[in-house]
Length: 481
Image 1: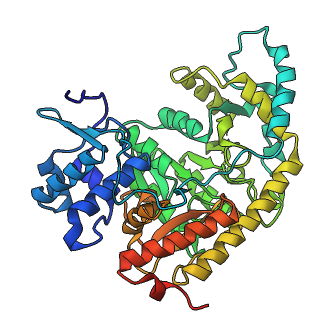
Image 2 (image 1 turned 180 degrees about the horizontal axis):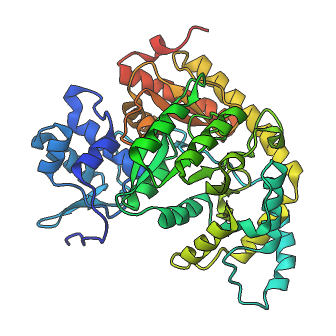
């Protein structure tokens, strides 16, 4: 029986080539390498089920490969269940079947997910759920639609901004379904097809995907990942003048993926540049509370304290408390927030009441978040020590907060390493995921949100994978004890 053709988007050959990066591991295994690289994108969620793949000729031209190699790679993908095809309808991404075997089969002991920089639910979540259940009765008599969010939760969020040096009222806060939802709402309001959006390079991949989905154009300004220079404020100034972006998207607190943090002086200069250009800025503060070496209240003031009413802050409980709550927020001027509320009606009608009650309870327990920071501090140091011991050629700047190490590799093999790592039971995000146009092949992101023993095992597997990419026996690649 022929496979039914699903409804889905189409990816072009050039776009797929950018996503795949340096996919070749060896000249004699070109088809296997290409199939493994495409499988990695499927497993990583970058090629959703139903996505139509480019025709063989288009993909061959984009990759600079022969149609014979492309055809052999597609045959492998069909055999493993990752691609389905029908004459006259082309090929599309499918769900892999149980008989899957091949270069990405997980190693003994199960696959380790090293792609998500997020932690399990914070201690006390079950207690907060019980308390929220008791309070839910107070809300059952009304319609349940809260386009701005529950007042009690907005009061707590506003108070935290005020404590950090940015006076805020509950009228300046709107609860959303996560920080990404908040960013998409702002994106829909501020930018349209063909508009430019200034971003850091590297930056959060899902923000880049949202910008592209809106048919806007991300304009990158490079960061110095060594931490010696960090944000290129002169480069931001030049990009604002030359590209005239509709807005900027910046992560100045424990930036994802580099872990860098802009100091107060840099924020003042950056705020002045943005004000002079009259460019709105979306400040992603998802990681601001994960200061692992100090009290978050003692850190630099929010960038919005220097950028004024042009700044729109987005935050989230996903990294600090639990991603399963799916709650975030927007902090902006009352005028701008009013426009956002009106724009929200085209997307949704508010966030769930019960989850907001749970988060309100959690925000009242500051000791739980302090314990989470202490735990992550130990996890960070454990991962750093494991990388130093097993992968001594990899370098990184130890971040003072956040959830990941941004590691520089000795060779530009990040995408190839990610493919090889999957065959050894580790799913890892290559540097190309964090670049506007791919690239960043000398970098890879390693989260420290897993238990130390799991991260130790993951790093050992990465060492084996790196040895296979280099063609070096693992015994020679391992450090001398």
